[in-house]
Image: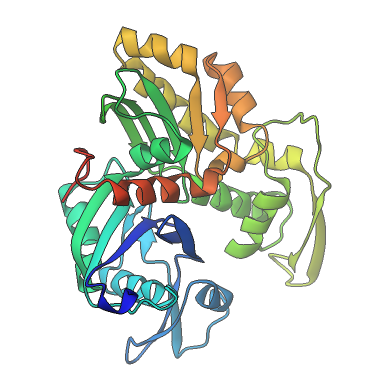
Amino acid sequence: MGFFSLTQKVAMDLGTANTIITVDDKIVVNEPSVVALDRNTKKMIAVGSKAKMMHEKTNDNIITSRPLNNGVIADFDACEKMIRGLIAMVKTGHHLFSQSLQMVIGVPSGSTEVELRAVRDSAEHAGGRDVYLIYEPMAAAIGVGLDVEAPEGNMVVDIGGGSTEIAVISLGGIVSNNSIRVAGDDFTNEIQNYMSRQHNVKVSERMAERIKINVGSALTELDNEPEPYLVNGPNRISSLPMEIAVNYKEIAHCIDSTIAKIEDAVMSALGNTPPELYADIVKNGIWLTGGGALLRGLDKRLTEKIQIPFHVAEDPLLSVAKGTGIALKNVHNFSFLMR
């Protein structure tokens, strides 16, 4: 019976934008990585989607925080509270949580020792007893269904909220990798700046995110064109209300330079790849995962630029989470997990 279970096994994709927790191969928590705190007592008021609803709408007594920035912990205390709050959301039927958690957590492949320690410490303070870390591109590759321990080269580009992780994987290890702090949040920032500069309208971070989702594109010509998205906001100078119809071609132009940085990072990782593995990648193609993979036309643009086929994972937002869940079941078999 679950009551006598001494250890609860939890896999976590701790992302800049969203945190996903899986238990027994089931996604039990999929929430924004946001926590709301009382400004005076620092006590947690809300976490996840409830906290995100408060974001940019708070009064002087409440602060909302995104504890992760560029894929790494920026606010240790807020991150610990967020992890605790998200773990508390986990519903395990008749099982009862003990304080003993075995956890596998996805981390950026470019993390420093200090950053890895911060993730591990946050997890341990939130109740983790056995904490394993796995690099996100490795987890994404497992989640896509690739045999990461085979003597064959596979390449994964995981575009998250705060970082883009690029890795060539063979024989259970990362042969060549490139981790850059350029990803979905940069697209959002570019859209905010563009709306202010081009249309003279102030938009919030959340509105810029909605623009990205509705009309975001990597190409100025799409086969299936999305409808223009209506944006409401105050005039930057007069503060009078404005309504602007934004189309995907505008967004493609405004985020072009950010996508170019990701292209350069992919080329750099390929340049450091041994020839035999490079040949495997040309044959197998490159896998796109993470929320950024959902950007319209991105796979086509990268394929045309790099001349290697790019494939979007079946469910790119969940690839890392699925991979960490599989790694959790194989903690004693996967030698690439870090303790």
